[in-house]
Image: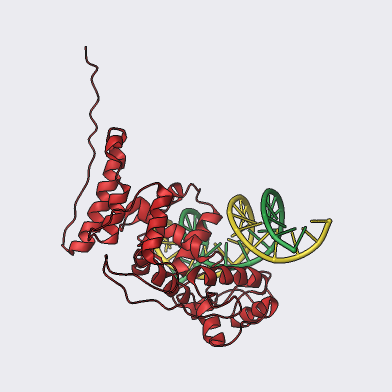
Length: 276
DNA sequence: CTCGTAAGTGACGATGATGA
DNA sequence: TCATCATCGTCACTTACGAG
């Protein structure tokens, strides 16, 4: 069972000779992109508010299977999400940063370091070449990874390191990417690698949308605007979709305005009466 | 064909909530 | 206090796929 205190991780597992060995250090079975997929699904479903796990599963076209739990667990280990009540989930501070194109890169770098196993490996091999594949797995075993899970842990580690930018100086060494100070929208956003604006352009291009330039919107608000249907598609915008958009907007406005209280969105659907 | 990897399923085991 | 149950994270295993 994972706890917030990774030292306690797996402590209460069975005897050393039990059939199922439990890892004693926290690590994700999936990579950073899988965690970000969860974060983006939460953002897409509920904005900065919380959503139920079954709703999230539906948003991700999945069932409440082990695979889905694996993904949500991965997101939590990267510290992108946190539990909300009994069966709810929401974005953490880091999760909010990672869904924002402006801060995604820095958040990826930080998320990698939030994994105890990855941080331990990074600390140990900082400034040195990483050991070969099998030796790295043995190293992970020494740090507390279950022997039979060492390969999975190593694979997820390598993919996550690449996705976070730690392999930009070569696959044989871990180098923390240089991140420029957070900039206001409209200023030059240059870091080593593609700029976040480039990333935003790409993301919007993926959606078939165009980037609105010259505004000073917060990225969360920009994300909201990007979700609006085109003017010629408003007549096809269903009420429940409108309500979801408005609810997400309310969550974002509440966060940004820092005002107490809340905004409720309700839907009353009226039956259309035939004319003539 | 072999090997490495990705993605999924289902079972195991720990933990917390609940009620007797 | 203890037994029971539900939930959740982890693990073992399978299948599919692509590269060499």
